[in-house]
Image (cartoon, rainbow, N blue to C red; front, top):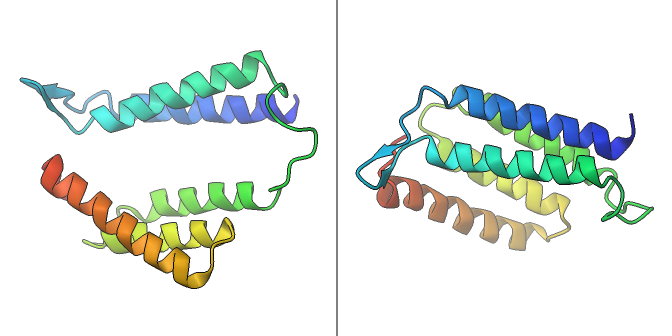
Length: 137
C-alpha cells in the first residue's frame, strides 16, 4: 500500500469513528444546531478528503515533501489533545491553547507570535462555543 493511500485509509477510519461516536448525539432542534453538528461536518470533510486522496494518490503532492517531521508530530499532538480532553477538568481553553502553541511552533512561528496567536485563538474558540453555540464544557 502506498503512502497516500495509507493516509486516505486512516482518514476514512477516523471519519467513521467520529460518525459512529456521534450517532446518539442530538443533531439539533428548531434550527438550533446540536452538539453533533460540528463533529459530523468534520467526519464528512475527512471522508471527502479521504476519497479524493484514494482516487488520485500523488497527483496533488510534490514528489519531495518538505515537512516530513512536522506532519507526524501534528498527528501526535491531535492524538494527545483528544486523549487529554476528558482528563483535564475544566481546562479545555488552556489545553486548546497549549496544543495550538505547540502546533504553531512546529510551523515555524516565533515563541512570541505563537503564544499570542494561540491565546487569541483559544479565547475566541472558547467564546464561540460557550456564547455562540451555548455549549458548556
